[in-house]
Length: 110
Image (tube, rainbow, N blue to C red; front, side, top):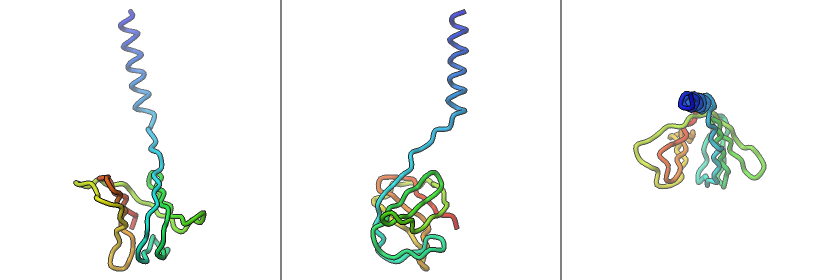
């Protein structure tokens, strides 16, 4: 009887662990922008900005002001990035953000 109760408790605990999603803490980092770029429809000038990524939502702030927001997704790469980097295309539109020591990059929605 005791083994049956222990087994039932273990199964219940496992079911709860699977059913309850684990929420990641938002990631925040200060990044320098060395040349003008475009986040979605917003042109961003050079300077120091705070990037906050909460799940699939990026917020770019300067001081207390929200400068730009964008949707995106995390993607894994084969190798870790050597440094923090904002990757943009020839027109200056931001494509992805890379973070030092991480294999995951944040790819902005097109």
